[in-house]
Structure formats: C-alpha cells, structure tokens
Image (cartoon, rainbow, N blue to C red; front, side):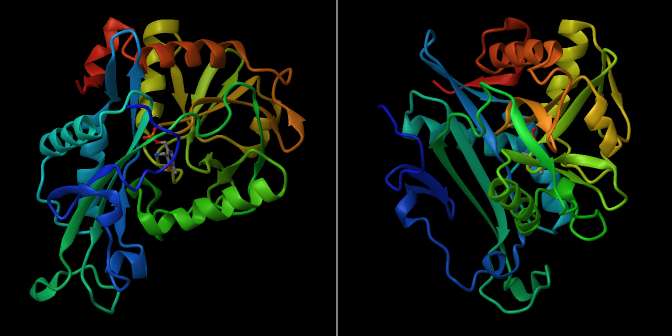
Amino acid sequence: MAFKEGIDLNSIAYFNGKFMPLREASINIMTHAFQYGTGIFEGIRGYWNENEKQMYIFRMKEHYERLSQNAKLLRLELDKSADELCQITVELMQKNNPNCDMYIRPNVYKAGIIVGPSLLNTNGKNPTAFSLCTMPMGEYVDISKGLHVCVSSWTRVEDNAIPARGKIQGSYVNTAFAKTDALLNGFDDAIVLSGDGHVSEGSAMNLFMVRNGKLITTQVTDNILEGITRDTIIELAKKELSVETEIRQIDRTELYICDEVFFCGTGAQVSPVTMIDHRAVGNGKTGQISKQLQEIYFNVVKGKNTKYKKWCTGVF
Ligand code: PMP
C-alpha cells in the first residue's frame, strides 16, 4: 500500500488499549495533558528497505527504555514494559502495512479529566494513558544541502525548570519558540544555548562539532535530550572512522571558528550545518566527517550494514 507524506486519519492507531482508526483516537478537551502538557513522547523511525521489502525500526527498544525512564520523572504509571511496547508497535506497523519510511509517535500522558496541575493520581482521578500512531515521513529538514542556522535568543529549558532530558510535551513550547523565530528570520533551524551561555543543542536535535579533526558534542548536563542518534553517532565514529568523541561544554563562538557542525536526531538524522549566524562553517560546504557519518548512518538505519543489524527490528 503506497502512502503520501503526512498524517492519514484512516490509518490505524493504538489508543486506550485498542487498535482503532486514528480519526477515532480523540481525547477530551479537559484532559490533564492537554491542559498542562503533562505527558512525554518519543519519536522513532522505521526505514523501508526496498530490496528486502522490509521495514526496519531503528533502536526501538532504546526509545521505549527512555520513555519508561521519563515516565518515572513525571510519575506516570506506565503499565507496559519496553518489550511490550515494542510488540504493540510492530503489530501496529503490520496493520498499517506501509512500504515507505515511517515515523512512530508514542505518548504517555496524564489522562484525568480534572482541574489542577498535580501529577498525583489521587483516588484514581488522574490515570496514565498510552497512545501510539504511525505516519509516513521523509526528511524532517532538507539534508541534501547544508543548513543555515542561527543561535536562538531563546535559551533551553533548565533541568530545574522542565528537564529537557524528559522529552516532556509541554517543554516543546521552548522548541517551538526557537524554531518559529528561526524560520521567520529566514534560517533553516536554530541552535539553543543553556542559561549559562554554553551550546546546548539544536531546536529538536543534538549537535556535533569538528575542530582540528576532533569530534566534539555537548554534555548531558547542558540541558540536552540524551539522544539515541547522538549515542549512535558516537559509536559509529569510533568503530567505523576510528574517531573518538570528546564530550564537553561548547562555547557559542567555537561554532563560528570550527571546521564542521552537524545536527543529529531521529527526525534530523545527520544534517550538516554550513552557515551559523551568517558565518560560514569551515569552507561553507558539508565537511568530510559529516559526509562520511551521514553515509554510514543511512546504511545502518536501513539495515544494510550487518554489523549493526542488532539495532534494526524487522516488522514483516
Ligand atoms: N534534542 C531534542 C530536543 C529532541 O527533540 C530530539 C529528538 N527526539 C533530539 C535531541 C534527538 O534525540 P534522538 O536522537 O533520540 O531522536
């Protein structure tokens, strides 16, 4: 079955413990998570491998493990294990039966129909719900050419305010501010700093920089989401290119003088950045290390590299 990019309301979703058409998977307007952003989510990709007629879901277990950890942060009572969530996801994908690259969106959220921001489930009045849907997705940003980005005037949410590592629904207002202003100002995307002025990450992706042949990424204590793609890149750079990644704070102005910058994330994949705040990164073209990592990454996620097939769950 061929799909068009975007959300198809006739596709099958998983909601309230059942498979049903997405158009029927609706919440009440007084739902706690809708009122207060009290939920968490994940973004997972499935890659269609045309030769094998197979859909590979990339590092699905790790996404559900992160979801389970983040559920603890918000006192969400997720009653399914990462393995059970993987099974439901595979079953949903089979039901939708796509033959193109897909995006998978699980949510765990406070489903009480109540007023008041507490996360407590007093008298069972604010239970936890789980929902899941899938949609065709190509590139999240145009990765064929380098991105021209800005350093945002919006700073990343602080760990003691809304922890960025939590992938909390409400915290994406921060992402929306940074991304929207970047687009309105003619940039492709934004880099956000933490409150103390160090580089945190992209609007919804992690950031790597190359300086003097060294690969460097920001540390988890600089208000980043602990990205699964970030972890993948660190491992691929080491094993495939013999390049170690240095994890440390990055100053804003290092971005202006370094040799290469790229974003990475489930949505962003590996996206070279060639211009920051109207300054060329390196020679203004996609750098060598970024290009190599991009190539390696795409082979791995599509299940074409047997060494990393452990990360790819076949659906069919
Ligand atoms: N940072 C933020 C704020 C994100 O939303 C994402 C996308 N999930 C990432 C980083 C990248 O994380 P991952 O590689 O796990 O998708």
